[in-house]
Image (cartoon, rainbow, N blue to C red; front, side):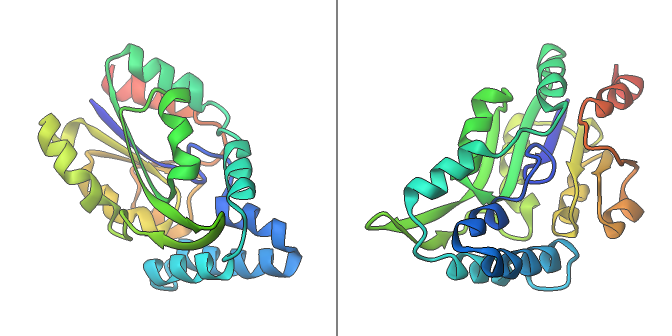
Length: 209
């Protein structure tokens, strides 16, 4: 079995760039949230939204970016869920439109087999740009690994919150909306409305154990 998680709003109980924007003051934070929420709702092109947000935060120091990335809270229940899944011999993938600066730590903390994310570029210790490895079609980043592991669609679960994650649903036999936007709720097989990933464990046990 394979489970695929989105990161921000699912494995992490935060959105990184709006928190990072707090370093530059409330007006900048609001600007970043406005772009972030428009992307989550599917109202703007996701790639352009990401580039706009990174451009708006140019000049932030690497030290601030790393410190804030490491301080983002793990979603309640995530460690319990991932630990149980690994004991049951599941594979775990995380895919994020966010950045290695927030995802690298999850590999060890949540025992994740493979993580796909973008990279922030720093020049002279200041935020400059972004290298985009994961686009709005997050499924494209993952498909080669699924083929390599030879895992069937009916043995795959996807857990997401935002409209920009919906293409991942095509990979899965069972789809979960986690505190989702309406567009995800309408398409998911099941939704969880409390920010506690351990609630997913009982659903998976009933369906797959």
